[in-house]
Image 1 (cartoon, rainbow, N blue to C red):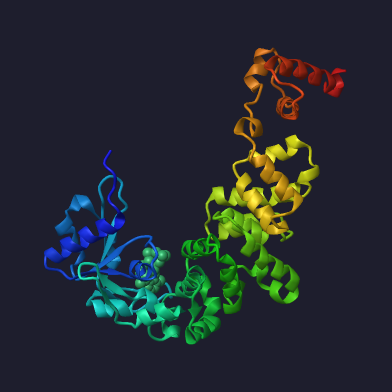
Image 2 (image 1 turned 90 degrees about the vertical axis):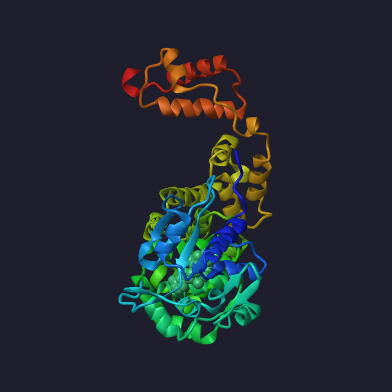
Length: 418
Ligand code: ATP
Ligand code: MG
């Protein structure tokens, strides 16, 4: 099967085709920033003077998708499962009525398009053909200094779209940049208004922050900026009321070696006493059911793991053959330290060959039925018992397992039968 071309090359083709047709076209925003920082951009966005209909005419209806029609954004589809390139017509945003999105957009010039973007480091354009950076907002200086600065008046910009406050914290976290003073003051005075933004958009920014290795900085910035209270009120009084627990939480986040959102949530929240809190917070930000279930499992499993070095092997093994085992050990190491005996024991066991760590069960429910054992509420417990005996090495063949099943049933007859 033909391989997709690198995304950079696809973005260059799209840009060249627009230019050859006589339109102005530039790479814009995050991809320019990342490239100047020497990082691989996550995605490439093209900004152009061509109107959305013109973009669709040029690339053909079959190769385009009007994904953000109201904002003039057309996706140009790649071949062979290539991710699309988003092509957006230069625009300036009309009045923001609800603190989230503009009421209308007006198609305009590159210079005005730069002004509607959030931060100077995100307001840059680049022409890859002559390798020129086009900078209307002095973004290159801030990029060199490591500064997140709102374009224009920060209060006005945050009033337009309150998510930008959280984006400032996310970029400061992932890039290890400082938020410029007036920009930060504006966040501090408007933080409570972030709640107006949709849960999905907030959740997406939090996910980016919490899965990043610098997540400790992110949580600290949420606290310093006042965003912690509206977003995670459960933790908001910790810094003052329980400073030691707060410091420990930050240390855990710093030590956590995992890219999993579930592991980060569990690391932050496992000390909160209410047992449903992880689920509540996960649902608040529309994290996926899998992420919420995994985080909930991690919190429960961590409390079982505390005595791993003294635990019967089958009990520990059940935790270590779970799909979340790697995240669990990362959480344990972040919580108790890498050299804690439980963590070491888990790591030693996880390194065992697969057939030893997680051997095929000797028996299934079907085998029991074939052996004339009638299905009953006891079935599950019986299978667990057989599995434990197998993991302990007491039985090694299906025949021995069936014999063991008979013994167990004899010993565990319901009361009224005996
Ligand atoms: P990344 O893709 O690494 O998260 P990015 O800067 O590319 O970072 P996107 O959300 O992909 O972020 O947005 C692309 C560009 O669109 C940004 O660089 C910025 O110029 C502009 N932008 C995105 N969201 C906003 C917003 N809420 N307000 C103003 N401009 C925005
Ligand atoms: Mg992007």
